Structures are given as C-alpha cells and as structure tokens.
Length: 164
Image 1 (cartoon, rainbow, N blue to C red):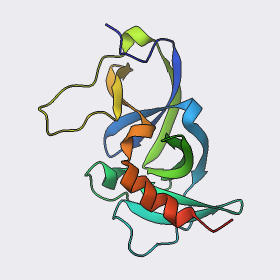
Image 2: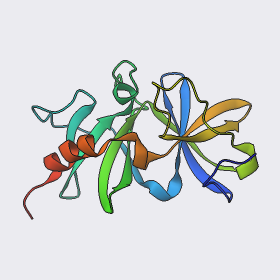
Image 3: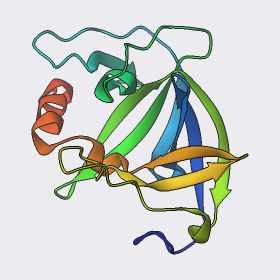
Image 4: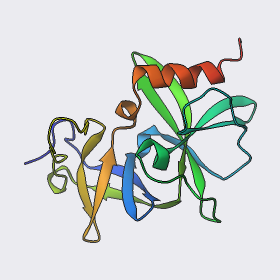
C-alpha cells in the first residue's frame, strides 16, 4: 500500500534530531548552512530561535527539536540550518530549520513508504507524510508545509517582514 500523494520516487534529504532520522523532500530545500549567529527576537515562541541574515534577507530559524517537544538543539560542529520553502495558503515563506546534523540525500520508492501511524486522536500526525526505511532504520518523512499552523507562520512571517 502506498501513501496517498506519494506516487513517484522522490529524493529526500535526511537529517537527525536527537537519535531520530527525519526526511524532507529535496524540492523544498533551498540550501544547507553551517550554524551561524542567530539573532533572538523577543516575544516569539520558544521553538523560534531567532533570525539569520541570508544574503541580505531576514530568515526566521526554527529549532525543530523544540517544535517536536524534544530538548533544545545543542550546538555542535555538525549542527546546521536547513533553509526550506514552506507554502501555506498560497504564500511561500523561507525558513531555517535547525537540525543536529544532515545525513544524506536518499531516494525512496513509493511502495517502500508506509502511512504515518495513527496513535489516538489527540496526536496530530498530519505533518508526517509517511514512514520510510533507510538502511533498515525508520525515517519519518515530514511534510514541511504542515508542520506549522497558520498562526505560527504568521508569527514567523511577522519577524521577517522588513517593510519592503
């Protein structure tokens, strides 16, 4: 059984948060940056670490570990910022996703991806496109467009709005 919406072989960028491996469609990834200085923005949610200057653009940086209820990302030599494009309500926002380390780009066949587990009704698993396998380890394939609610993105977009 293939997962609805995944009908062709797609390349995914895999990255680690704690001991878990996650994957994003490479089409959503703009670039990968080494950790740089992040400017904290007051009055923003905990998971929003601040903003970075990306060639003159203000890009909000999200701590994916905090967003998923894990402990904050510890800065190491492997810590990186995955710059992604998030589309919601027709608008595209560029975000930086803080990850412990980037692994590799892998191809996954649709029939090797299983639907996300349904664990009760309280847990929102809409942002998990499916579970893939890489080297016999499960990889959670994320739908980056569904990780953030409209309200959360409004907060994030507000920080990057420089009036131009």
